[in-house]
Image 1 (cartoon, rainbow, N blue to C red):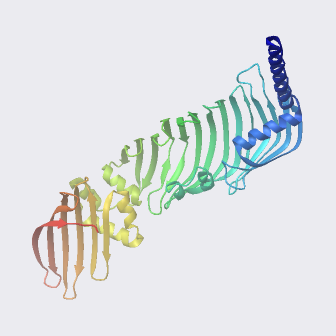
Image 2 (cartoon, helix red, strand yellow; image 1 turned 180 degrees about the vertical axis):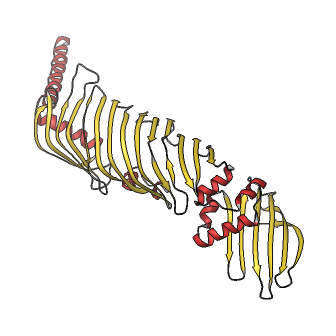
Image 3 (cartoon, rainbow, N blue to C red; image 1 turned 180 degrees about the horizontal axis):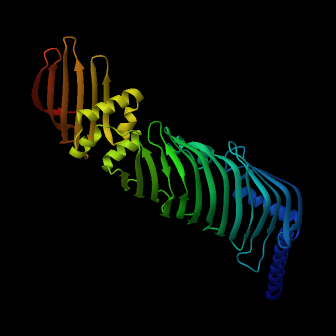
Length: 427
């Protein structure tokens, strides 16, 4: 009885081995079986709605060859995307742990809103060697591939001649190549004719992705609606792991009303070290004003040396703001928390406020008015406030008023001040 049981178990094991061998032979040694296995893998991992091929020959062990394949609506790409290849070779080797080999010839990727992306290359022993090219790229269309982003949604423009090479380990690919940004727009600012050079490497794919290497820009022309035109010189962004925190090294030059300006910017976002120099030599604060406005501001030199805003400078800004209507943008650019403009037949006024720290703020207001009686007045207000608690702040204000009678040529000056206790409650 015991002998019969042993024979039965041996027969069962042998039958199982034969079944597995036959099952494996079907999927590995026949074109139909290999094709079924590949289609299952494509459906499971690439999640393509359809997978068609004009011809299939060979098998996975000796080499499975697909002619003219097409994959539509891959889950990882926008709806309507189509991946096509003239020829694909697939193979598996049991004698090599890194046995999967893939070779793709004359492939194209069509994504709605983008020009055709061409690529070809191979995967062998978990090592990539691919080339990617596209003639035209809509920048907003490319950014949409990374998902919705309030900041990225403000970018638009056209790029040309994307030429990349992707090499190295499958999970740590290296990306090198070039791209010409013809036009880039964001909130009224633009950059043009900017050739980029890529030398990057991704690490940690499938986990927490890290980015290393640098993205270089050879040159560019940068300008805003009313800013100075800046000629970008050779600059770069260096990535040290966190792709959100690159280290910038930016150089540029500009000319504003015959003043030559050199710009150097280094560091991470919110930790920039900005250096501005000019010929003739001017204070950095003045150079910053000039770059932001494209004007020299005749009255600003003395005010900046004295570290205060003069009536002459305020008048310059008032004229600029009235003509351009861009006061809020200037306030944001210079870190002002508030900026107000008043302009009519009788009164011209300019007010600015800047937060010096989380609790301390300073303000300045200039007003010039003319009455029918031939009287004119010039009023300055200097103020400050200190935040005691979340709802209580202590404020102080000093007013300087100068009245002049144009007819009698008499001048009268007076000064007044006040201290206020403010209580703010939000409902």
